[in-house]
Length: 336
Image 1: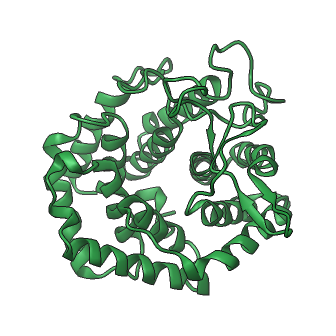
Image 2: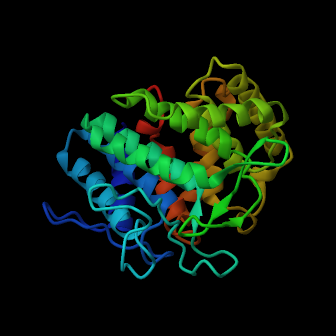
Image 3: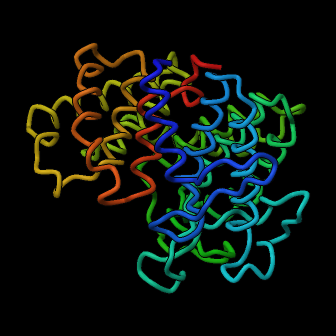
């Protein structure tokens, strides 16, 4: 990692999470969400692990661990903090799933609950912890999480076809948003496989089979015009790049991104764009080997454009994903 990139990431990390105190460090709450936020914290854990691998400084591994524990202690509990979710315990903190971490309660339109694509992002972060620390405890927590949420998000319709809910209630008892996320089956498919491959014994064969059935049924029809969705698709497909579904989706995603670029979506006024959605793109094109050299040059342009505006809107998710985009590190299959 270039020294200037390292300094840039370290400055952002300290701004977001607070100054490091050895042996007694707790990440400070986010500005926007006033607490923890699952998607952002998954990237935060990965950023700390990348810093550890780049510097060999144990501080960053300690911070990654502290962030994991803080997320489990806050988002693995009811909103009032009174008790853990579902059957979770201190030893198995993910057995009830994890809240999104939104400020408003689940009765509001954009309130708290459980998102599948946030849960898979967190399970992935746990898998990177397990790999860097060579510690099966994180694999156990990831499997506990999957086993807890999968039966609630995945269901069969009257024709016995598998589908997914996009958002569930905090206690996983009912769907808050019954529609299906565009990428949720693919997210589940690669995340489950990565984690199952790391486990002492294979425990996720049935869950993987569910996801594969949905992937096989959907991938030929994949389409999106959202920079984050397209970047995530490129990230998802780079884990198993030789498989037909991954090749098809990667090609479709790159074609769609090229169309967005030519149509001027990345030259719209900043007040009509969201930084973190474009960092989804820049992460995806960097890790996916099918992306053109031209697109990889555009990454720097997008970084330079957004750098002066990182804290003006989405003050947490944008700078955290910007750090990942500056140096993808452990989010890339080529890194560890």
